[in-house]
Amino acid sequence: MDVFDEVYDVIKDRKEHPKEGSYVASLYADKKGIDKILEKIGEESTEVIIAAKNGGESEIVYESADLIFHLMVMLAAKDIPLQKIRDELQRRRH
Image (cartoon, rainbow, N blue to C red; front, side, top):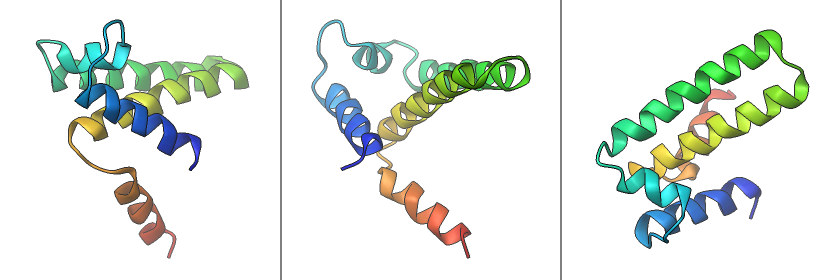
């Protein structure tokens, strides 16, 4: 199991079994629901763009990880498994 699968499994677990103090659980519990998650994706996307324009490699990596994390939160919210993303990327290889 790679780190993406491990993180995704934790995200799904926090969605299904919220734990007090969990950031992921708080995103799912927010009254805005999916809107809050999508807002975070927008914020993180902007931070990646700024880092790519002005930052060094470590900042780009950090912000990219935040963006990927929040994309995974959205995918879990929509019950879309990571394998579907892998399949789509595989399809695009050819």
